[in-house]
Length: 374
Ligand SMILES: [Zn+2]
Ligand SMILES: [Zn+2]
Image 1: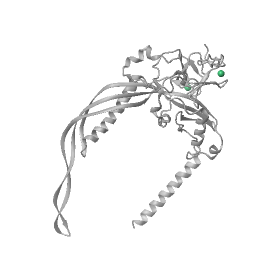
Image 2: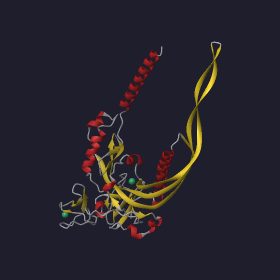
Image 3: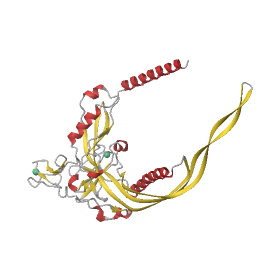
Image 4: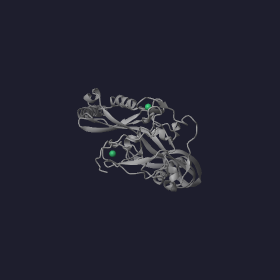
């Protein structure tokens, strides 16, 4: 198959055919059902309101080789972008014309290498139009943007992408020991010579009394969230962290219809390593707080982790780019809450003016301070 074979050569097979007309049904953000693109028929997603709790799986790194955990409910294929390396999952039979991450047409099917299926999903609640409106409201409030950019309308390419995350739960027991320093003060009498006469005076001198302490500390960590996406602009993604994880619904392949799912590129093992280092950081802070004192030294913490579980989850992101003055800018909109993070053009003139104004203010302050000292 040639690299430049047009990706839209054949009409894709409908994964969720419409009962009325046979067309492809897609997940609809407004009704939270499947909706036909052609005739508008709606079909509820079964189990949507059933309160079944997502399963937490026992942490077992061999799960990544377990085919039973790789059933996504529809046959999947991985499409890889030759430009940015992004890996997207699409139902078999569907094709992508361009990369959902960077817009490049250099996309090639890779077959199905298999990946652990998501346990739960926050479905898209924000439509493409709402995401565009959120961005337009947001961009006009940015600082230092050119006036022309503020006034003119901007047309962007948006792709709805489910971004992969791991969440981990773990029970922890830590035994710790450390030397605690507590400040004490003593009064010392000293002498000094003033105008040829010797006089005595007293000073407060601080000293530290050290003693050893030890103990055990227990903490249950719930839903430690670790991004598993490799292709994302991490800085932009990190700012979209207002997801309400209590909205997670059990995974249904219907939620993905009309959207792209990114294949996780952080393995379960690497995800847990990262979760563990975040947990360790938190435990260190908690144990230091618990020990108290004025200073701590030689702190050693030995933590046992048990009853660890994990979930693979997908969170909705509108990934977008637009062009302004022949440059491409990128932004993202949280597909659940509509919050925006992104990059905007800067007006060099406005920035220069702002810097000059700051320098002028600093100059005036320095002058007034100098005056007040004389
Ligand atoms: Zn239809
Ligand atoms: Zn790409």
